[in-house]
Length: 91
Image (cartoon, rainbow, N blue to C red):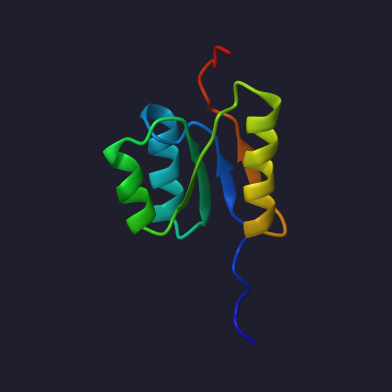
């Protein structure tokens, strides 16, 4: 049998700075990633092209957090890790 696909690592705040660097690190290691982002920067397009699943999220409200969680649950049956890197959100 073939090797099973590893579970993805979820990275919040993956559109810029440290989160973006972490996403690229794991992508380069052939590790699937799911990235949340608040603002669509050009770097998001590069992550998508490289195979990352990128989900726009609004963590400033409970509804936004739950909508993000629902999107994650639709795409995977589990996670390898969660790297919570999102910046402060002002409601």
